[in-house]
Image 1 (spheres, one colour):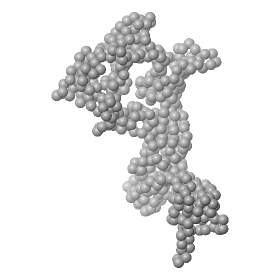
Image 2 (image 1 turned 90 degrees about the vertical axis):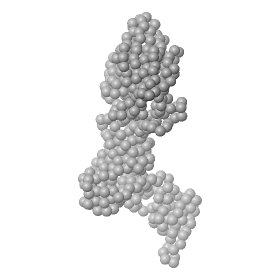
Image 3 (image 1 turned 30 degrees about the horizontal axis):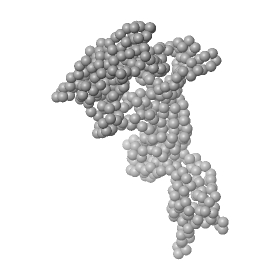
Image 4 (image 1 turned 30 degrees about the vertical axis):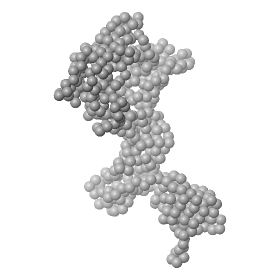
Length: 481
């Protein structure tokens, strides 16, 4: 195991601090570390539950959090013995750890594995070395013995041999000036230890993997309008935060958008994969650091399209994931609940929606940049939307024209009409967002215009409304369970 040893640092009146460092996966015989990290975002709700009717229940799907780490290393392995890798995150899930030999798949077995927590404070480091020989410096002399116990006030040292053996209690409030600990094969950093058997002793190419909390990422966006307000520059950044106790060198990153893998999507499209963003270059993630990487190449002078977004009512679907809404009188109309906003659309080079994140919009004014707005970015596949303000030019209502509940057949058939009116003096592109809120399993029939599924339970209908005109959108949604 290749270790990087830092000389002993001593502390007056406390324990000597022995620093033994090993970059994650750095155990080996000179091979370059190779690490693959898949990180789920930090903002995902852990479950989709019913906030109105009692929260999570049987059948709730959990959204992944944290990160999955896969390391490839070269280890020196005996025919039977232990191998150790130190410097892993203190927050790793010990039950998720796996070790396998790539170079000798059939002849390498793991008989036992342990996770050894790390020690940070002087007291923790001293406690880790209970049972080992240490040297205690006092005002009178240096005393060599076996450390038997330690707390914030005193050390208990076993000194002498045979009939001369005794326990000495030494105060740490001035009597103990220094404690020296010999450098051994053990480490005070969090470690994984395996007891293994190998048919072919020697160097092995191994892979070990584990899940850990403490690695998260969030998305941030920057948009700059030109002076004519026709085009904009648009960039997307992922901020990766390493709150673990480990440093990852030369890591290949895959960032997963948890918003695309929630329970509703798992129920409606079990085979659908969450959105994944592969960072093209290897990254160093130091402990406690934040690193920003681009999600895609920035768009320059991209055309900005104004659009009106209409929602007839707030989305009720989070309250109906555990059971079906069979009350046909509930939310049958939307009078007084609608909202409309004005947004700018820009095409982005992605085949899926961008992760939720904060977007800052600026406008060029000569040599200055003026702040326009700051809001949460809304996105669908290939398009990013930046909300500007509320709008009162588009009015609308939503009505259930019919609703039939077949209790025996486990089916609800509901016909919906959305009425829209453009009260402005100019033609507007309008996007009506409709929520299939009663149950995640459904199909759409008889759409008056073709819609697009943008989330597992959201359908969007895009129309152009001339000045002063009205238009209706109708569709039938069939829920089944």
